[in-house]
Image 1 (cartoon, rainbow, N blue to C red):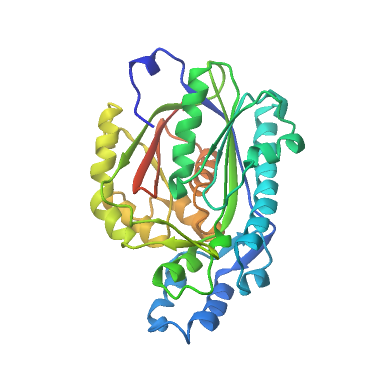
Image 2: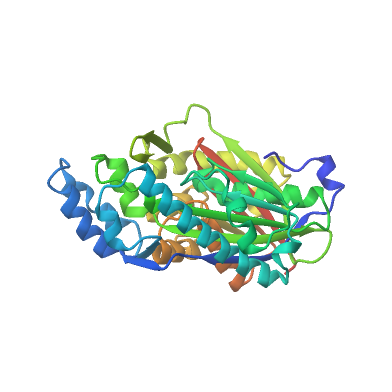
Length: 359
């Protein structure tokens, strides 16, 4: 997704009409997950005691999963993981989308385009097609399923959806982000990356409605991305006979501290903005240490990202939907004149959306 250009300026910007979130029914306390993880990994992973503190350092108190706690304590393969994904993702899609449409005063039959962001399961036909009849989409609805954006998907998805709305003023564009990260948790992988994933990841969904040309106090002002070269090893999936396995081969907080601000400066420059023009940063929180790193990188006062800390505490890291959960809280408290929504994900990529609010 590229930045604002001359053609974009000739079209009305997309406006945010509504935003809603959803989580599955099963909640897990972090202290219980930590106790069980010790039982599974403690005797098999060298120096596990040194890594066990990861669970307490995440800032997470509670998170949610599509399956009961006990389901995750048995090794699962692709068929079981995929069945759980389809059932859970479809339910969350319908839940989040229905609430977002109701908040916008729309019926599903009034949706012209639906953008679906998901990187934690494989569905062909895609999720939007699977729920189309249940939710009530028209037969001629445009469907845009997107895979592989990972944690950047909330911001990148908003970028994609806003451009589609801007290209067709008056059309209703529905964005749905659904991620079931818990289905990638592995009992067989004795790696630091897998233990970090076990300490962080959760399930959730967010949906929003955009329309250009009329209505909405919050406008999508500009969008931009930065792809760092030679960073394929930072974050992603391994694929093997049992399912997805997480890749985390660099220390992301250290990467954020040194690399984030220069990348955002370049993105903002192409938006004809600078860091001083941003009243509020809305950031995807990879965990408590990543939040600290973002505040350091952007020279923010410690504790500035309070909604980020609150969401990670209450929900864990849900990948793509997480930054939209934070946007929901920020909207409830009142957006300032200009915010920059940012998220980092596989690639390694920074995705940004500038939001202009009629304060």
